[in-house]
Picture 1 (tube, helix red, strand yellow):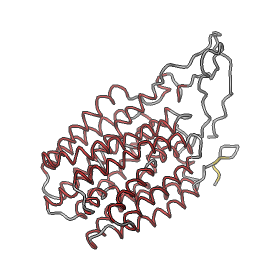
Picture 2: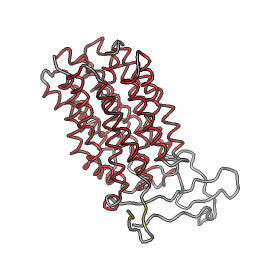
Picture 3: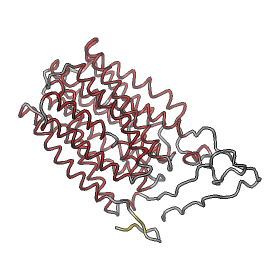
Picture 4: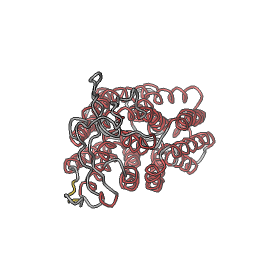
Length: 442
């Protein structure tokens, strides 16, 4: 289908002659708040906690880091099956059912972690809890849903929603370390399971909605007929910004889609190597478990203002350039560990990684800005397995390198090289275009 036409800058008042006024509050910000909670829960109970549980669990159970980290690989394998199903469901039915189902599954699986003794039990429970649970609370859902409620203010909305990831990480990195030290790692998993259900289910059931059109609204709080206030007693009403409208079949026909997928895959490979092992690395560098948790919390605290800045910047600067800046900054964070010395290398990595972690919100934004909001869930869901390929290998590769060499340095150097390739591919991923007849152009 062709791109939507540009709206008229100013149109008359409504048919009755009375001027429309800007709504005092746009319900889309409630959607942002609910997805914020989902992101916080997925992040806190997922990658961050996985990293903090690593050393206590392998020491208690006698596992290697490779054995433990294989849980992420199993999770990613299940994600490959779940994502193509979840995306179209979000477009058609909304995210409420998926988020409630995901939180219940994750809560149950994490509660059952209390009883594990064998690696296969851990793999099954973590894979199901993360892939059928946390995955339904994180970036796929939040990015797709928030993108449907905002166009003009999409950058800031996605950034605020994405802050849930960092808030959850800050809370969990200290809370989980404290729980493990006080009640043991088994009861810490049980507590996480209870928190996942309690934090997500009530607000999702009460407040989640599919699209603004379902409530008689338009994105950003715009009115069906854009107008200016006739009596000039208030600011102009928001106008709809024209946006592209791409179907899945059309997106598959352009090079940009595949450049994006490869760039995201390579970024995920490099970032996953660090995220799932950073708490263990910090402990290997001489920090205690709680100090390592505090460093992870600091990284995410740095990310909060950085992510907001990237979100606002992307409303004025092409999102691809903002993403490139994040990729370069994250590259510095990865390379600081193998190339730096002393405790300074840890602090440098925390700083640069925190500044570059606006990537999550910007990745959701670039898909929505390039392909529009109408089929964003379907496009991201069906293409999701391609984006998850790297997460099958990244953390496991890092663990294998550590078990073979006793050091993470080799894996982090490889990750840095992969990020350089990701930067090059992202630079080539220019916005896709259609001709006047609406046919995608290569």
